[in-house]
Image: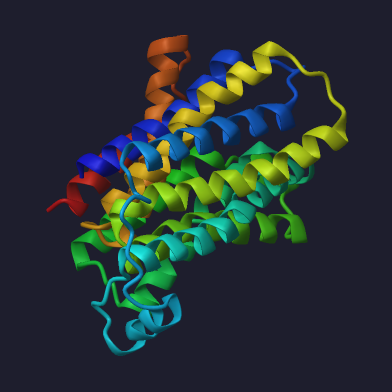
Length: 303
């Protein structure tokens, strides 16, 4: 649970940093590009610092190694194949990361923040459902109750009668759910088959591809370039990287169907508590209820 707790802290830090630096005149594409830039640079530094590419031996081709997964569910890819797998899954996931960001912005305009936030958070249902279907990671009865409480707390925090009035099922909301969920699911896909020691290469691929896409939109948008936006992106990029870093480590010991709802609900709780302690924001009654539900969920899941 330590790694999951660190992932939750990193995830909540992103929102709190945005809150601290929020301004109506920010260049969101520039912030996103700066965020992805610092994340992939740190990943690259860690790759060379750990010597992950030093003394690498190609024991067999990636295809042959990958075929062994179909005959042995416990098989883990070799170091060489783990690197190839990380680059493939990370490259695809980088596109999902950026697309979820784009469609979140579009959904906010069409459906409001409440619905968009809910759908983005409920994207965790994709890795939860896939892990149950594909890898038979069934939670215990008591853990199911904890998972249900986590999902309820997500709905309570994000939804309101006003946001529901504006809600309408549109392609934007569906794509936000899919892209956000697949971005999260990629962490499990990598962790399930590859060596965790090479996760830095997987993370590098994610953020490098996301950076390339983002910088294209930044240049095309021709927005104002400010030092504040660049520094905000750098500040966000560090916890953004480590939220995935620690989440991957937590998935090695926790079921996906358990880890993701706690990760999502825990982040929401910590954001509310951080807002109260740092920015003196009042915690709404419904958010207080959500915090209590999440605490109960954590207790149940750890029984």
